[in-house]
Length: 310
Image (cartoon, rainbow, N blue to C red; front, side, top):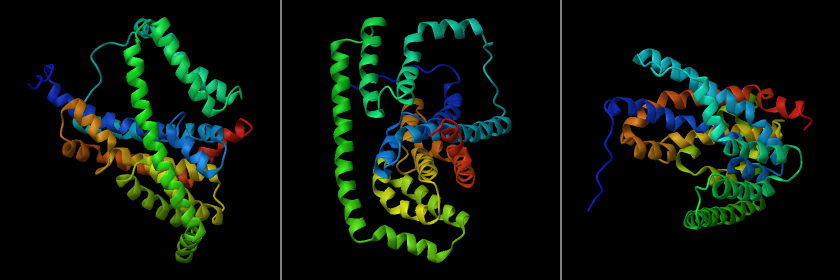
């Protein structure tokens, strides 16, 4: 017997549509901010400092979030949406922060340990696991053995999938390098034009198309050996190139046919994927504009690492 759908509050049908398209877009800026696996995978394949990649991703993430906020404001003005009628209460914020203090402390412990050199990003994953288990089981008492086993099963499946992709991508990349395919592609692009901005436009256009059909990790593992020679030939900083690549591929989270965020937002809100896709298109355009801004102004990605001595 199929379970009944939960009762929706009055006005859910109208309010869920904007919420679904906003939520499907909102997670994309943080694909280039720590600690996502895309940054770690790109840093590993590109043989650059993962910590530096993390730091370089902060300001680009803010730029992409700013683009979404501007588009959100414009759409709200056009459609007549307004903020919550519930007044802001600093007391409620402080109470919620107090109750979630140990959970809010987790990013500070993990990132602080990475940036201070106490442990590597790989070791940070182990620290995060034990810290989360301790807080959930001992402090909040919300984790039991069954939940831990379920989490381990899910993590094992995800790790196995990534390892399979990593194996195939490594073999594929080795074949490409041995046959000088990256050099041929780089030479072909440079034979068309030596204008840096046109090359950025071609690279971003290719990455947008790939991101629509391929998972981000797989795309990074396959495309880094192919695209990196182009960056070197044009004198583009590899950190800057990596940040632009991750930001561009992250747009695919919300563009069909892959569109992972679209499926998640559709399942939660009950709005069809087709409707969410059309309504979320302006937010995708805003993200693409932000990506071009990051590409044209490399200091957005490179200033913070340089300021911190990387």
